[in-house]
Image 1 (cartoon, rainbow, N blue to C red):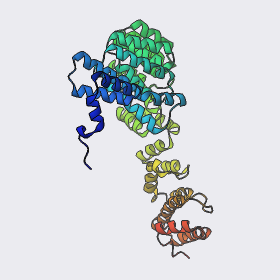
Image 2 (tube, rainbow, N blue to C red):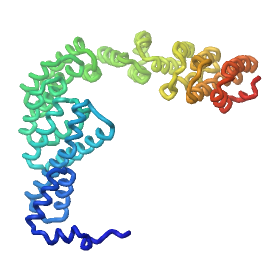
Image 3 (cartoon, rainbow, N blue to C red):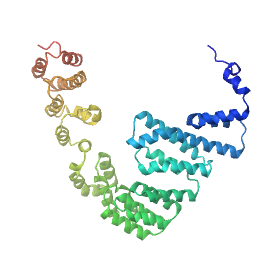
Image 4 (cartoon, helix red, strand yellow):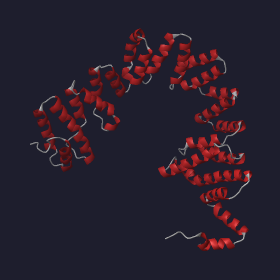
Length: 417
């Protein structure tokens, strides 16, 4: 059925007959309790009527307040309960993003920006809604002048808490207020990142000796998040021609949460002679790395016995998608160490004499197929495979789902007798 033309709508006829003052009263009354309607009215008037520049700015500000009113009930609930369902979280986040986008165009009057800040700051202080990034974006985009930024920094400072003070400190530094920056920075010097921030401040202020003193103190006293600080000192050691100090710092950087990529990057930095002096030191730190990284490094070094030892000291992964590299490596090592890899595969079968969901039978059938491959294709021992598989089959003969999945996956399973 075709949509009615406006003039055929009884409501349209009544609206045309109503005095202008009554129409205004009607729209205001309807929009006053329905933020989405208010926003739609403002948007419609912006697009379809001629407004003066001041009216346009007023309209844009009112639209943002309407958007805030629209999200406010959900935001209040998220804050009260420490988050909520995905739908509410996504809806509020999207509306906050829309507000920040409009604010970032620098065309909203100060009064409206202040109202939005007044609305957002309590939720930033609470930090309980799970939307910190979106709320901070609104607060930052509401600042157009140095005075705005200073007021925001003071608001964050009055709230307390490390995260808000970090924001306040960064704003004071951006404003060039060295005294306030240093006051807040001295309150928290714990991590390497804290010391790096202060050292970088002094360096950019031309206080290079002070910067290096702070950085060296951070290397001694800092705990965690040391990467940027080490690179800061290493860069200046390299510039000063202190190769020994530069390599010491790069070594510390490499072995802090050692990975194969860090191992290779550090080796690339070294000359042949330098690598000889550091190789044993870095290998001595290998046991502190995650097993996957140990495995990667051993394979990179072609140390296959050590690699298979790393691989087989833990069970086959339950969730294979988290362990692609380990499984790929096991396949690569099958020919060199078939018995060890077979044992590794079988460890993933677990208890084969208990009931389980079909998806678990599917998973075990895939592992059993790998055991078949090692016994039949690599070790070329079909009788051993038959003895092993026949026992598994007999132990599960009364589990039809088990038998169905193993029949689908494993060659010759149905014929086993």
